[in-house]
Length: 361
Image (cartoon, rainbow, N blue to C red):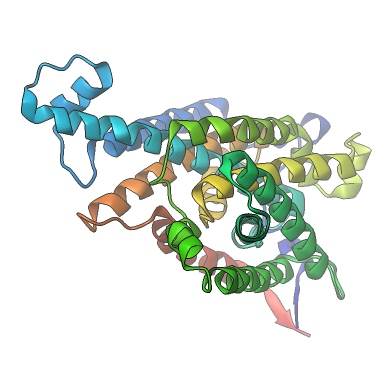
């Protein structure tokens, strides 16, 4: 059994507070520079996403496909069609990456846990299990049905993991939550496999979805999931200032006039909606919600009014770039983006665990 020393329970910085507990971090100029940098990286990732794939295309063909000018000859028709097919995939990668990054940042703030992430805490696994159960046992079809089932599963998983992680002396510590999340994720994955293995038709359909990917992007699916992701983002961003105060501790946050229980509830609901909707469309993609908020926090500080939107942009850039890598390194086949993000995120997770000071009881 392990216990975490008090200063490391949150793992997140306790910044000097300004008016009403608002953290003072980097200067506005530094934050704007980081914002410009992230926007530039996102632009490059988007350009690479529409330019690179199983079929190489030239920049002229990319421009022709995006502008609809044509006129490059019959040999370019197929290339331009390939570029146009990559556009919804690129858009889906952007919105899924942004959603998972915001969900991770919100979970880290609500739990004051540096290891919080939709995948690590089992929320994505619960959403995936709920979707599979809905399809196999209840005949759920269509993206809206998947989204509803996924959000229900994500909410149930979040409550279950937090309850298990809160048992014992010391309440919910970062390591206890991470261990509970890892155990439940393994259980959810096993249950999904147990349900799918005897059902070959369903298993074939969802074997790539289980890994996590954006290859099946369609405008109809994006349109179906967009309202849910927007609602979750609005909830999370609306709690940004209140989440700043949570970093100072519950007692001080209450003294500053913050309704702690309401803030945690609304931010958690927003994170669950973002995770559930993203998982329903793209499958369980891990580590984006862990890596991105930590990286952005190092650059812009802990103020969630800056952290959340910049994390969204950085998450979009990361997932789009990871999708490009998965398409390029194994031509003519593809490596699903969930595998690429796991290769990136696993070392970061190990490094964060090693930074926590623990002692045997």
